[in-house]
Image (tube, rainbow, N blue to C red; front, side, top):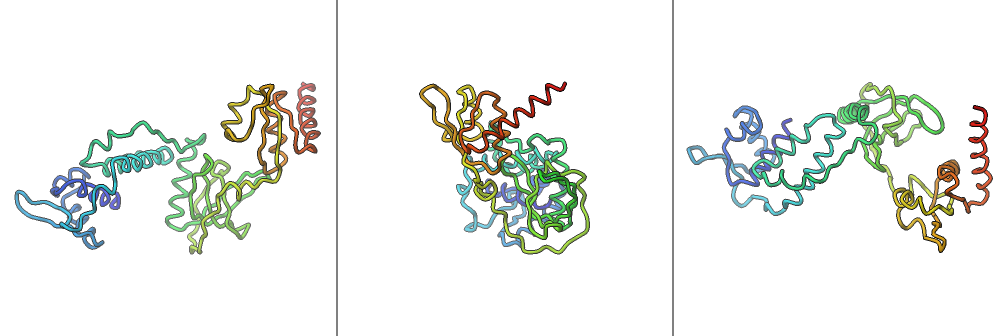
Length: 302
C-alpha cells in the first residue's frame, strides 16, 4: 500500500542521513518512478525532502527540519512492532509483519529487539474471526451496512447495522454500530455473529465512542459472598484477582465480588460442585440447590 510505503520511506530517512532512489525502489519492490512520486507526495504533505543528483547525491530531509530520532527510542519501536505483529493474528495475512519490516528498515537491531512478546488477538475463533474482521473493517472504511444473525441470551435475531468501530476488549472482539432494529448504538460480540454479509452504502452519522468501563458494561447488581475451597484459589486469582478473597483460619477462601445477574451467580457457584457454598445473597441459596437437583434428576433418568 502507498501509505505503508511512505511511512517506511520516512522511517528510513529518520534513521539515515541520505538514501538513494534505487535503494528505496529495491527495498519496497517498486520502480524508481514510483519512489519519485512518493517523494513528491511527501513534499506536498509538508515534509521538506531534498533530492541531490550525482554520485554522492540522494534523498534526505532538509537540515533544520529533521525530527529528533530520540523521539522514538529502540524500546518505543519495539512496542510499536509488537503491536503490529499482533494484528497478523487476526488478519489472516502477514501484511503487518511486512509493514513492520519497512518501519525497521535501516535499523536491523530493532527487528532483532524484543521478539519475546507474542500477542495473539484471535481468541478461540481464529479460523472464523479473520474473515469477519476483514469484512467489517472494509465495511467501516467504505461506509457499507452489514447484516448478520446474532445469538444473545434473550434469543436469536437478524440485525442490520451501520458499522463504526472494531474493538478488542475483555479478551473478545466487538463491533460498535448503529442497529436499525433498536434505533440506537449497540455493541455486538463477533463470536455470536453468523451469516455476516456486507450490504448497501449508508451516510455516516455522528458516532460517539462506546463507554466500555467495567462499571458501565457489567454494573454490580448483586454483591456475592461465598466460601470457596482452597484448591480453587488459582481460579479466583485468574477470574477475579487476589483482592477478591481472604484466606480463613481453616484455609478456605472467603470470596466477595459484584455480579450483574442471578443466573451468572447460580451457574458460577454450581460450577464448583461441593467446593463452594453461597452465603449472600441468601435468597439465592435455594436456587443453587434447585439448579443442582435439576442436574441430578436429568442424570438419574439416563
